[in-house]
Amino acid sequence: MALEAVALVKHDCPVCDQVLPALDAAGVRLVSQSSPEETAAQAERLGLSRVPEVDDDLALSERLDPDAVPSVFLLEGEQVRDRVEGLDRDRLVAMLRTAGLTFAADGLPAMRPGCASKTREPEVAARLAARRARAEGRIVSRELHVGELEDPFEALHERGLTDGLPVVPPTPERVVAMLEHTSRHPQDLVAEVPPYGGRATVEKVAINAVMAGCAGPELPIVLAAVEAVTREPFALQGVIGTTSAPGPVVVVSGPYAEAAGMNSAGNVLGQGNRANSTIGRALQLTVRNIGGGRPQREDRAAHGNPAKVGFAFAERLDETGPWPGLAHDRADLGPGETGVTVFAGESPRAIVDQLARTADELAGSLAVALESVASPRHRLIFDAMLVIGPEHGRMFREAGWSRARVQEELYRRTHRRAAELIRGTDGIAEGLEASWVQDPDALVPKFAGPERILLAYAGGDAGLFTMLIGGWASGDAGSLPVTVSVEPWR
Image (cartoon, rainbow, N blue to C red; front, side, top):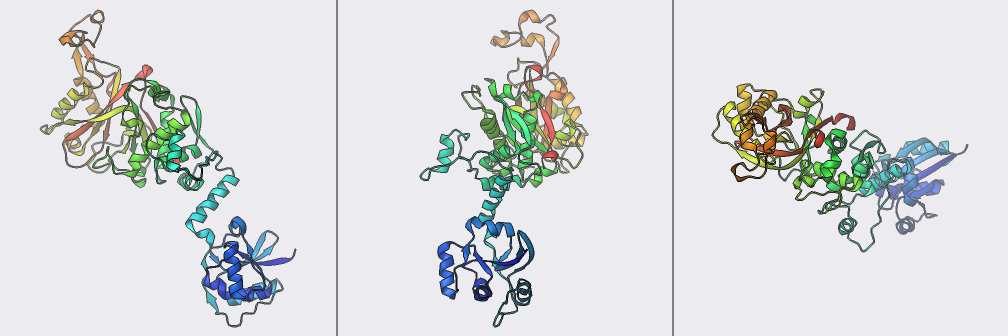
C-alpha cells in the first residue's frame, strides 16, 4: 500500500506558518484544525498553492492524536508508520523521502517546538472525550436539549430535575470528566432505586453528582451511599414514603474521606465544605431523579428535614479519636479501607455539657438527652446517633471506654419505670397503654439494644458539645443502618 504524508496545522501557530510553504511545495496533504475562514486567510497570507483541507469536527486530529502542531504523519492506510511533531528539519527530510517526496528545508531552523494541538485545549479535549464515550457506549443517557433562549438553570428546575436549589447543568463533557474518578464501567448497575425501581447505573449517578456540584473525587462515596441506602435493611421506600421526617445521613469513615476533600473537624455538620455539601445532595438527587422520590408526591413527609437536601460528613480518625471509625466497627473493613454508613435520621441538635469532667458524668448527661428522641414516652421503636465532639471524646478516651462500653452505659441509663410511661401520666396523652403494664416498677428500655445507639466522632477542637441525631422507626418496622465499603467504587 502506498504511503501518504499528512500534515496537521492551525492558523495561529507561528511554527506552522514557518513550515507550511515547504510542506505545500513538497505535495504533503495539508489539513487545518482551524475554521474554513481562518484556514483560507492563512493560505492567502503565506502564498500557498492550495487552501488546506479543514478537519471537520477534528475527526482526523482525534484519530492521530498529536500533542503539538505542525505534526507530519506518514500513513499506510489507517496505520501511522512515522510522525514528526513540531519542526525537526532533518527528520522531516528523511521521513518525506520515504514517501517519495522532496522537502526543501533551506532556510528552516534545525528544530523548533510546535504549538499545542487544538485537541489539547481543555474545552475541546472535553468535547472529544464525550464524543468518544458516546460512540463507545460508555454514556448512553438521553440528552436534554435546552432552547437557545432558555436559561439552563431555570430549564432544569422547570423540568422537575432539581431539589429546589440551582444545579450544575450535566453536560456530556462534565459527566465524562466525573466518570474518570471511578474505575467502574459507566453502565454498571449500582442499584434499583425506590419507589419506582429506577436503574441507577454509574453513569446516571455521575449525572446527579455533577448536578449536585461534586468536584469528582466524591463520586466513589456517592456510589457507595447509593448502594447502601438501596439495601433492603435500610428500607429506602419507607424512608421516602413515611410522614415522619427522616432522610439519609451519610457518615464516611476512612482515609478516602480526606482524599475526597471531606471535612471532619470544625463546622463538620455545617456549610463551607464542598464535598460534605455535595455528597449527600448527590445521593438525594439520585433518589429523586432516578427513583422518583418527589416531595408531596412519593415523599409524604409532614415536615421533612435538611437531610432531605443532603446530609454527609466524615469521621475524625486522627490521634484525638477515642475509637476506630464507625464503619470499621460495623463491617469487616481493613484499616486502610473507607466505609460509608447510612442512617435514617432527623436534623441534628446540640447536647451541651460543659461541666462534666468524667466519662461517667458525661454518659449520664448524654443519656438524658437521648430520652428526647421522638418522645420520652416512645420505647424500643427509634434508634439514635451521637456525633461526639473532641472535648467530650477526650473524656471517654482518657477513661479507656470503648465504643461498646459507651453504648452499654447509655443503654443502661435510658431505662424508665413503666409507671412513668403510662398514657395520661403527668397530663401527657402519649405513652404506654395501661393494660400493657403489669409491673409499674418494671424498667422499660428506650432502645431495642445498645447497638441501636450509633456513635460517630467528629467536630472542632473547642467546645464541650455532642450532636444528637434522632432516628426513624427501626427494626422490622422501619430502617436499620447499613455500612458498605467505598473501595469497590473507586
